[in-house]
Length: 358
Image (tube, rainbow, N blue to C red; front, side):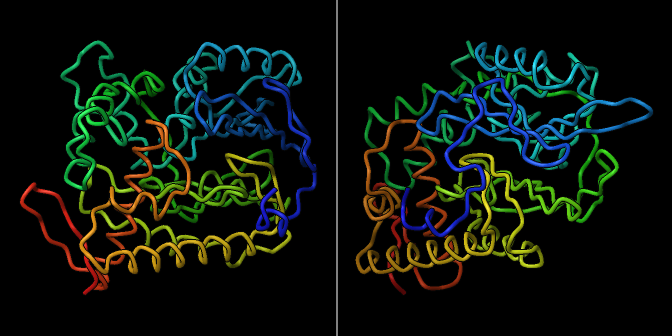
């Protein structure tokens, strides 16, 4: 446990639910944990006891990726974690594969509606199901030919890395082969009744187009999704779809929406363990990004590309999956400083963006 983690309170200690098993956290709130095939090896999902249109059952929050082993974990959960009751609704916090990947399967299996934000639903529909056999598919986000060109403009020109990023054009479609064709839209400050309790929608930006968190004042429970995580910092990236984006200020501004929540709220994050210490964790994240921005600005005393700054921002070896997100995050920090006027930008003879102190 790192020093910052020690400043937080983990009510369940190091206890983790086994895949497909549920841990009771509060009245009508259960914790599921599903595997991921990445360095970040798990995602937390949530079961909320519900009653809709005269039927008792569960609302599921987030889904996991579409892999056979995750479906198997869900089958175990259906048998052992639902008390013999059906899934009545599927809520997805945002469009990243580990959150929306199995939404199509869960919704079809239980004839349950999908609830998520408009922007994330639209982008998931756009990216899902692209032919995994079609090498002409451009890809999306951190992988594919468009991503490779985007990262090349920011200094990642190594031919081997370029080829590997391009080859992963089907990254999203393999994990999210489909998305339900219809959905129920979630909006900021909307109140959703789940099991007779009001859950308030808090929309955040920067990590995803329109990320949904859920706050229940009756239970003092916040389902934070990826907006507030206890151990790792939330990825905030600039990808090829919006190459001139400036997401880091959007993310940091979004965190102010949690200021009115109590300090002792139980935070249910998508990765890591449920914890208390919401405001302390947000302060840590704000300090973290302030430090990273200062380090990036100091490094740009000479012209630097985003690729040049990877050792400044990441003090570990990056695998190919992590490299795309690291490049996106480096660009996000450069853009934050560039758009506020702290850095200037130029294009060198090789067509690479270089940033330098103003």
